[in-house]
Length: 75
Image (tube, rainbow, N blue to C red):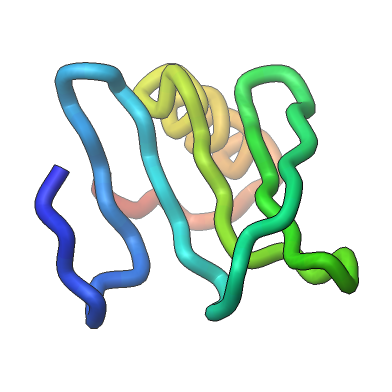
């Protein structure tokens, strides 16, 4: 994974992990919900998301959006 401080979203193809930085600060703990890990600061504010099996997650998300009538977009 290439580190770039300006980049808020990164993808690691070898591990199929999508990472999303949603805040700045020190990560104190993480909580896992299925294939999603949410990393929090000591105040409980989410700072970072990791989505394992990202390809599967995105395909399933696209299918659900389509069922809901959301216009298709390219991945």
